[in-house]
Length: 114
Length: 114
Image 1 (cartoon, one colour):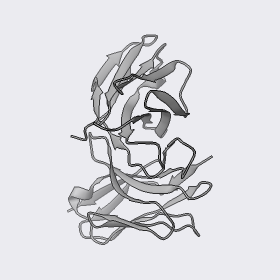
Image 2: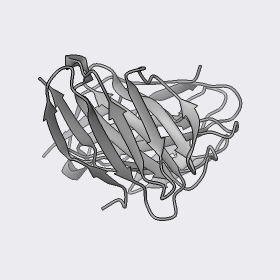
Image 3: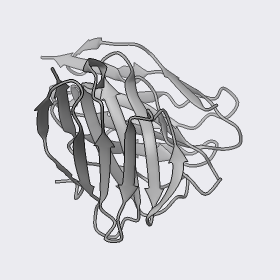
Image 4: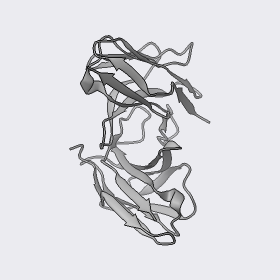
């Protein structure tokens, strides 16, 4: 157990729907990151939050949004889902924003869009 | 922007063989460099890291040296075991900027056969 908790583990939904993925960071970590892992595009950085504030944005679609709450848990919202959004979504956390920080990953949420 | 290039897999080796997985990077300044490993059905976990030029990271028999002159961070192990079968990701993190947008390579799948 890495200490980073992601729910749900698996999710199957239909095109056009909206889903929310949840992440609880490791105790003491203030930064949360979201990554998308698909077979054809590898591990893509989506967004980073630090202590409730957005710090860095990657290849995140406009249909996707995220936020980090005062208790430091984070949610990734995916809307108007398309078949191509099927992927494994990872949350990771770290203590701060220093480049040397190690990321601790959760086990992932597998999204299947039918 | 920052990028990481690592050798494509899959790499298939016999037990006790020598392993090298090549990784080169493009980044400004002096990023921190990492190797993460992903076992089947799990999230990524840190294998080793190096934060400045000529540093050697090591863990579980794996080693990698931060070579600024060749912008490389190749992963090596002298004698692989079946339990080393996994996907290995090279990654970099900017040295400064108040954020930590970790960029990952595409991953190299290693299969070790008895």
